[in-house]
Every structure is written in C-alpha cells, then in structure tokens.
Amino acid sequence: MTQQPDTAFSSLAELARGLQQKDFTSVELTRLYLDRIDRFDSRLHAYVSVSAETALRQAQAADLQRQAGVPLPPLHGLPVAIKDLCDIDGEITTFGSKAWATRRSAVTSTVVQRLLDAGMIVLGKTHMVEFAFGSWGTNPLMGTPRNPWDMTGQHRAPGGSSSGSGVAVAGGLAPAAIGSDTGGSVRAPAAFNGLTGLKTSGGLISRYGVLALSPSLDTVGPMTRSAEDAGLLTAALAGPDPRDPGTLGRPQFHFDRGAGTALPARRIALMRPDQYPWPVTPAVQRSFDEAVRVFRSLGARVDAVDLPFDFTELTQRTGRIIAVEAYHEHARYIDDAGLAFGPWVRKRVQAGSLIDADAHRALLAQRSAEIERFARWMQAYDVLMTPTLPFEACPVAEIDETITPVGAFNRPVNYLDACAITLPAGLSDNGLPLGVQLIAPSGQDQLLLQCGQAFQSLTDWHRRRPANLA
Image 1 (tube, rainbow, N blue to C red):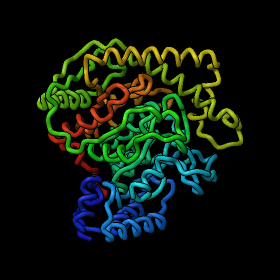
Image 2 (image 1 turned 90 degrees about the vertical axis):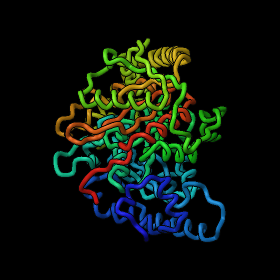
Image 3 (image 1 turned 30 degrees about the vertical axis):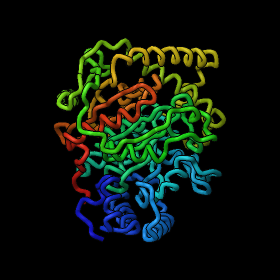
Image 4 (image 1 turned 45 degrees about the horizontal axis):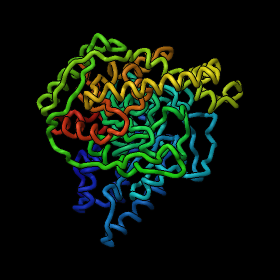
C-alpha cells in the first residue's frame, strides 16, 4: 500500500482517486481503518460494534469488481461508519441504550442498503446519545465518546446525538459516517469535531429502518471532511423509497461536483448578533466574521438582516414536539424503573407525557404556518448564515444537562423544515474547532453544497486534523 502519513484523514474523493490510481486496494484501505480502530478506539470510544470480518469480505468483493473492469459508482470500495440507529438485518442495534443491548434488527435500513449498493464498506456502528435525545453527546450508561481534538487534557464534549460518528471521522477511524438530525444531531458533533455536516431536507433520504426520535423532525445526513464528500454521500442515499412515503414526490437530487469557486449573485442573509438566541464566545464571532469576508470574496452579497423569527421561541417549540413524539415512541417502557435508561434521557422522554394530543396537533399546525412564512421570507435570499454553535467543545465534567445551548442555532432549522450545512470555519484560542452554518429552504441541499464547496476552495479549516493520533 502506497500510504501517505495522512491517508486515514483523507477525504472520500481523495481516497476514491487513490483506488483508481491503484495506490492501495479496498482491502488495504479497510485494514488501515480497522487497525486504527484497534489502536485508538479504546480511548475515543467511537464504535459500539466493529464488523471487521464482514468489512474485509466486502472489501475483497469490491477489489474483485474493480479488477474485472466493470463500471463502478463513485464511492465504490470506500469505508463508512453507521450511527447505531440504522437497522442491519440480524445485527444488534442499540439506539444508544443499554436496555436495548440485545435488540436484533429484523430489517436492513434503506440507508445501509444504498451504501452497500454503492459498493461502500461498513466498518461498524457508532455510539450515540440514548434514543438520539441529547445535543451534548453524553451517554452515562453506554459511555461518552471523547472529542479527539483534546487527547491530553480533559474529556471534552463530542456533540450529539451522533457523537460516535463525529469522533470516528475526526479521529481518522473512518473517512465518513452517517448521522441523524432532529434538532442539530449531525451539525453539533460535526462542528465540535471540525467536520462538514449536512442536515438534509425532510424526505430527501429514506428513514425506513432508522429508529425514530421525533418523526415530524427526524432526518438522516452525512458527516464528512468536505462539502464535496457530503454531496457524494447524499447522492448515494437520496431518492424515493416506497417504504418511506415521505420520500415520494420529492425533487430529484443531483450533486454537481466541483460546482465552482465563485458565488456570483448569491444573496446571503446574515443573522445579527443582537438576535442570537445564545451569547457566542469572541472566538466564535471572529470565525463567523472571517467566514463572512470569505463569502464576500467569492462574489456573494452578504447583508445583515432583521429576522422575523425568534430562534429562542422556535427552539422551545421544537423541544416540545420532540418530547411528545419521543414519549409516543417509548411510552411502553420508559417509566419502568427496572430498565437501565440514562436519567436525563428518561426525564426528557417522560416530559412528553404532559403534552396531550390536542396540544400536539396545535404545535404541528403552528409549525406548518411558520414553515410557509419562512419559505416566503427566504424568497428574497438564497441562504441564511449563522454560527453553528455558541462555543467550542467544553469539558464533559462542566456540562449542564438541564440547558440546551448546543441546539440554540440548530433546532429552529428542523422546526422550519429547512436544510443546513455546517462548515469548519476556524479554531478557538485553545485550538478547538468552530463552525459556521448555512440554512436554506427545504429542497435547496444542492445550493448549500455548492456554497460549501466554494467556501472550502478558499479555506483549509476542513483539512485540519487533531494532534496525537498519528
């Protein structure tokens, strides 16, 4: 294997070129990541299970197909990690819960099946917040993954709920991973770990075989090193699925690789600091201001605007919808004191019992009206730009589970049925990743990916990697 020092931290696009140029085989690449999992995952705790033998068999088959000279999809032969809420027939899917440690799936999710159809190699399942209900990334019973950007100091928040997926990619234990996003669960771990994360439009990617937290808000999305990689993964996953009616009748997704390094005539609305739903650190504001400068240099028109929405209020409404729908999903057993559930997740789910069916219907009707209002307001703009998170990853010991600042800029996106992308945009004073978020109306995922590729053509934050993981 012609391995460069940073092979494990390469993008999917770079690894695909390596396969085409015969720098390495799929088997060699898969072994590289499996070896790194053996070396580092006892400290990072990214994976709940590793499918080493199956992955190597998949890689061997991929190599044989490549040797045969048959036309291959763009991601063929590349490894990927899967958040442990995606079913794989016959395998255990814990949903991040110790109480579900022996639950075996009876179906294979469309997400996993489409990755396999694209020729990708499934390395294993990644840890997550229990029932995907939490944004800090903590899991007291199954273990909290460690943010790899601080390996010698304190155990820092990985972001949730797709905590293991973010840590696996950032730590070089997978080149890309699948996450889910109900209120920021792709974007928070992506931003805390220096990754690109796409919160896809509802219905773009099938949720068949993906365990639900809040069906009204749940989406599936990629966590990758670059916007190009996010587009490649989304293209492999997107499309109608008769087993998920929400995917039917949606516009076709087409990803334009290398969509250009300019954004002429694009209109970016800028969230004013006085409308922030949570105070941001000086480092976050500096990185945000620098990102504004980059977008202007790309030709975009960036204007500070007065938002007709209160993100704090939208965050609270989102929380109520999640709670009532989560309670509906887990009401049969959440009150059973004999079952091992994390105390904070149990309380969040139980809180949904206080919201009755009439109140739930009213919440959804109110949401529908706000979605329409957002779509009308966004007709004057292409993208809304905000910080992704108010701060960098804090020590796990300092987390207050009673507050939700991590979702302050994220949850409203799900509420408004929008799509969003978080892009690495800087480092804090102590060297931890910071992100910037672009938001667009539902169905504009391709526009966000175009903006992301343009931004990353002028910046290298997405190429930064944690130290002490060589």
